Image (tube, rainbow, N blue to C red):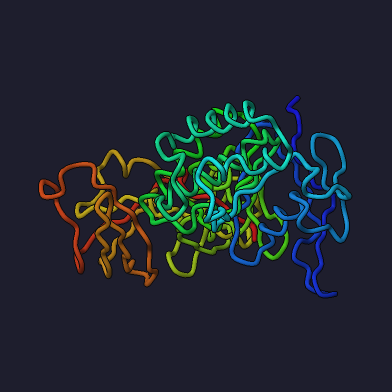
Length: 370
C-alpha cells in the first residue's frame, strides 16, 4: 500500500466571515508523486497550498503531513518549502547566497553550506552563475535558483505555486521538462498549482480538478482527460464537442442517441442507461476524422460509425495541426483537429468553404450524466 505524504481531512477555509474559499475538501497525495491542483482562478487551489505550508490556517478540518496533524505547527517547523510565481529572490544576494540563506539561518557549518549549495547548483545546472545577482539571470535561471533554495533544506514536500506563469511559452515548456527531471532526481513529493491544463496533463502523476472551492475529480491525466466526471471537467480540460440526446436504443455496449442538432448518433455505453434517459456526450476534436472524400466502404461496414456531411466555416493553421469548425448539414458547429503528419504541401489541403465529411467511431465518444 502506497505511503501517504499529505492528507486533507474535511478541510474548509472561510474568509471574511462568509466567503468559502475551500469547501470540505478530502484529499490524499502519495509520497514521492508529482501532484497538481488544477482549476480556474479563485477556485481555492492556492489556498490549499497555503494551508499545507502554514501560511493560512484551516477554518475546519485537518492537514496531515507524513501521518502527523500539523494544523498548529508554524511554517518554519513544517517539512515543507514553497516556490512562488515571482521567485522571491533577494536582489542584493548572489545565487550562492540566495540558496544558502536558510542554511545560514539554521547556523550550519561553512563546509556543510558549501557542499549542499554546490550540490544544488549542480542539480539545477547553474554552474558558473554562483556569483551572479538575480538581475543578471534569465527568467528560467531565476526559477531554478528559487527551486534550489527551496530544496536545499531537504523538505518532505515541495509546493509550487504557478511557478512558470511569468515565463514565455517556449521557456515554460522547457522548464516543465526541467521540473520533471528535478522531481525524478530528488524523489520527494511535489504539489503543483496551475490553471494551465496542458501543464498539469503533461507533468502530473495525478491531478485534482477544482471549482468553487471543491475538488470535482482526482485521477491520472489520462483518466481526467478521457473520462471526465462531469460537464465542467470535460469543458475545462481541453476542447470538446458537447451533444445532448435521449437514449433511443441500447445494443450491447452501444447506445443510439436521438439528438436535436445531429439526429441519431451511436455512442459507447460508458455506464448503465435507460431508454428515454437524457444524456450528454463529449467528443474530443482530435478523435474526429475530416476528409474531402466519403469514408471507405471498410469504414462504413462498421455499424457504430457516425458520418456527417458539412462545410468548413473556419480553419486555423497551427503548424503541427489545423483546427476546423465544420457546419454540419443539420446546423451543428463541430470542432475538429487534423494532425499534419506529412509535408502539408503534399497533402490534399482542406480549406475554408470546402465540403467535407466528418466521422468518428462510437468508441471515441464519452457519456456524461451532468
